Structure formats: C-alpha cells, structure tokens
Length: 531
Image (cartoon, rainbow, N blue to C red; front, side, top):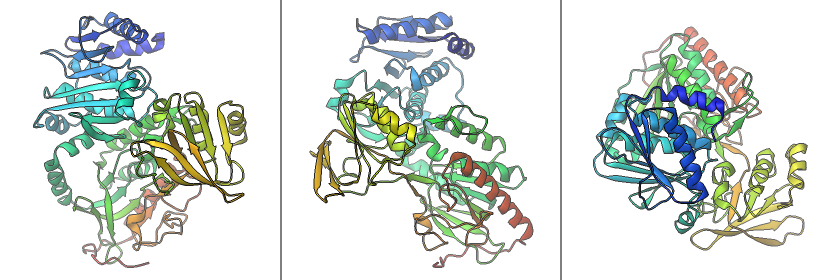
C-alpha cells in the first residue's frame, strides 16, 4: 500500500510524535475495510506511540477516529485517506500526538475560544486537490477544541449517502446537519463564518496600519513574486488577497515551470507564501479590495478600500488580481452550480461515476477534462462553439480514440436544464442549422477560459475591452504609482512563469518610481476620476 520511499518519509515524520495516539476503527468484511485495516496496521507498526484498536463502533463503517492523549477525539475518517488526503492523515497524527501545527498562535486561540458545539461533515474525493485544505482546517479545529467534531467522508466510498444528500461537488461541508459551504476553505475562512466579531476586530486592525511603501493586491504567482522582490529591496511591503495562492490552488499538475519537472498548484502556492513570509512581507488573507483611491499628486499616498470598510495606504501599488473561470452566463447555470454544474473535473468527476456528462469548451483544458472524465463516467459529450476543436493535436487524437466520448462542434449552449434539485440536461443551438437541441445528462463541466478580476477598477484606470488592465513594457498603468502584473493585465500568454516574471518586473518598476519620486504629504483622494 505504501512504497518504501513513502514509508521512509513517513517514519521521519512519526518520530515527531510526543504523546500516544489511538486509532480506533469500526470495520466490517468489505474490501474497503480490509484496505483501511492494512493502512492502520502499517501506521501502528511504524511507531510505538500509535496504538490501533478495532473495537470501535460508528454509524459509518468502515471508519476510524484519531484520538490524542486525554480522551475521545473529535476527528473521524470515513475514508481510506490516501491520494491527496494522505497528507491530511499524517498531519492529524502529528497534531494529535502533540506536534504543534505550523499556524499562527492567534488562530489556535481563536479555535479554542469558539462558543457552542459544532459537528462538521466534510465530503471529499481522494482525487480532489482542493479538498485537503478543508479537511485539514476542520481536522485542526476538532483536535484543538473538544466541542468540535469533524467527520471526513469519502464520497466514492459512501455513494448512497452522497446520493441521498445530493452532494454533486467536493469539498462539501455540513454543519450540524445543514449545508455550511462548498469549495476550498481555510481554517481562517471557516472561523470567519463562525465568528463574525473577529471580522470587525480585524478590519479595525487593518485600518490602523501604517502606510506601506509597496502594497500588492493579489496572492497568486504575480503578487507573491512582486512582494518578494519588493521586500528584498528593504522597503515596507504588504500583500492582501482573497485567498493566498490564487488560481494556483485550482491547478492540479504543473510540468512547465522551469526547474520543476512536476509540481502541483497548491504545493507551489504554499512555497510562494513561505518565501514571502521569509522576507517578512505583511500578508493579509481573506481580504477583498473594492475601490482604488488614487493619490492627489505623484508621491502621495494611494488608498485601497476593502470590503470590510478598512482602508490601506501605500506609496505604490501593484495590482495582480488574476482571473477566474469564465461562466457560460446562460439560464440555469447559477441555479445549478454545485448541483450538476461544475468547473473542476479532477475534484468533482468521481461524484459522476457511471453518469452522463458534458464538457463545454474545446481548448486544451476542455479536451483534457473530457479525457479525464471518460475513465469515470458513463459518457462524455464535448461541445465547442467554433467549427473545430482548438486543443493540441495530440490531445484531440487521444480524445477521439475513447469509445464513450462524443464531440459536437458549432454548438452554442443556451440553457442548463434541471428538475429543481439537480441538472437533468442542457439545451444548445446547432449553429449550422439554427435548430435547438437537447442533451439528457447529469453533469456539466465548464471549461471556457478566464475573465480578469478587475470589475472593481472600472472608471479608475485604463482597461481594455476584455477588462484587462492596460500596462506598458514596465508594468505601468495609467495611474502614477500604480503598477499591474499577471493574468489581470494585457500581457499575452496567461502562464504561471509569465505571471511570476511580470510580478518581479512590476515590483522593480515600483521601486524605481519610489526612489525617483519625492514623497508628498497628502492623503489619498476620495473622488475617483473617470477614464
């Protein structure tokens, strides 16, 4: 089950256990239970501090709890946590065994101080690269607060339960039996939803910060690179983001980043964040910018208003807000999001095992999604608006070799059909004949490109007709002291390596601006000029 290399790495981690950890399993005669037993026996054999019991009882079988010293644990895995969740299991063992988590002390104190009782159920799939963040956040809460219980459920293992609850996207989180949220969530995000008072306090703290020399808006490769380059110049540097890592968190395999034969988006995102922290960049996570307040004159302070009401101030700003998945913008899409309409085949594909699905988009991402899904679902129909697919020839050849894939070109999707609870089909127009057509299916995966996150900047600085920030060769925008980088700009080829390079260039340009522009003693203006 675990190869020699993985066992060697695991052995080194388990040596960090400081106190006994009990694994209490509820098993039956199923193949999944046998696999779970084998994994738990392997773990117990690798450390004298891990004790395995097989006399556990639970409504979900097979499952096992992770219990640290001092009483019953609040963390249970109704899963065989391998694949992307193996790291979640290892971290749970370390935390239960007394090894401190690598999070800020204030976060642990906030977890411990939560009022009330919380029972979380998180549905995940072992192939989902977004799920571990949620699993680890809720595991941390269960292991550090006795009033929090967390059950991690493999949707593929408990398919009947998934069907009964209409879980059509992972990760999906239930709190005390009711839907709590879906998609990637950090511990900070979960706590923010549970403890509204912390948001007010955080806004007050941000509003009181001294001005930055350079403030980066966006936590992806462009923003992180800009922050590192700025901080290395010895200037006061801040970075705010709605989520650290940006779209990297939604990227599974990366094989074209120089010096990295293969990595994964969440891993690279974590490494970029650690790099920025090493240079003492002030990171402000879960913060959304809603308004840019230009300086009254060159050298004056620029303001960035946040959704919380706080206003950050800086002598220069780098905008690196990235992009997001483009929606189809057809009736039914919003209503059935996470109820059959999905955007991540790696995460949600296993939930559609044996079902009929469609992929919208014939570029590389769409064709790759169809290929991935073909190994799981009953049938895949790929719809492309143009008269031919745009994906690489090798991908098209692979796609057409699959027996359970159909390709429809010149198809304009017009409506997502549902029964009130979930997707039952889609309607499209055959652009050759102009006739409407319908497909009966259970899942729709949208893969039609990206849209820049720049709506909040309209009327403040120059954008092109696609909403991208207009910049010159050095990253200057139309506003003095404001620079931009990455997927939100007019730079062609939206690639991770290009975004990182553009971020570095923008930071160097901002530094050049700072040393050449005398500092003016003015506040940011309130009136926003129209472009």
